[in-house]
Length: 262
Image (cartoon, rainbow, N blue to C red; front, side):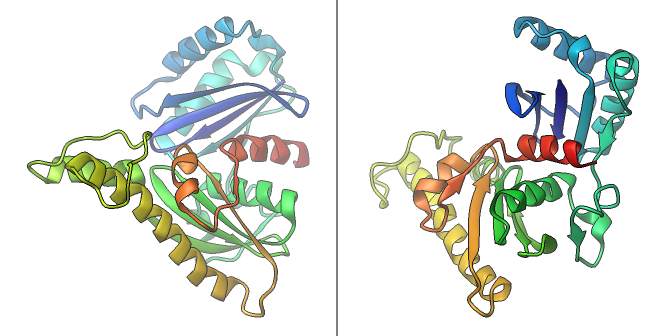
């Protein structure tokens, strides 16, 4: 089995693949202080609950944007998983996968590993110009050419960051749950007004920014595809006209695809 690890700023999403089938996945908070032993204890418990034998794991691939956790994971793997592995764990970077996707940015090493994994996964699926919108701690728009070139993108504050800012930087605005939609666009109370502002506001932002990106990405009206991923993608998709496809497991499937290519 293949153990895929996507270490993000807010959450770490892991998955187990038996062949091409995702047989288990977990989403936990990314604690930068967590040690290799603590990671081992936590996942030993998760595997036990899922009746999975860790010795059946013969491959591991990691995409991380948190250096301290990346180091902890590698130490954890070397200590607790190495005996069953067919080869050393693969760590995704612009350099390590440069033969699969060409990164055409000023500083390729700055591009988050998860963004490159998403780009490869989406391109393998659609093989055309792409905009991949990832709703994570930050919201990223990643642009990929029809020739599988990573062209760059945009970065803006994520939904959770915006909600936290509203609650902490104002005297009367509360923390709210946006999983339940507002009744109307025009809010009749503070909570409804905040929900509408976040959901309708980000939906309109996605549509407006996507329209501008498309004019640069496809100047000759070439075909393109927009898809969304990330923990909050399903919340914003109903408020966006341009998002037609949501795949919250895109990064895990991309990691599995990459591992089979290297």
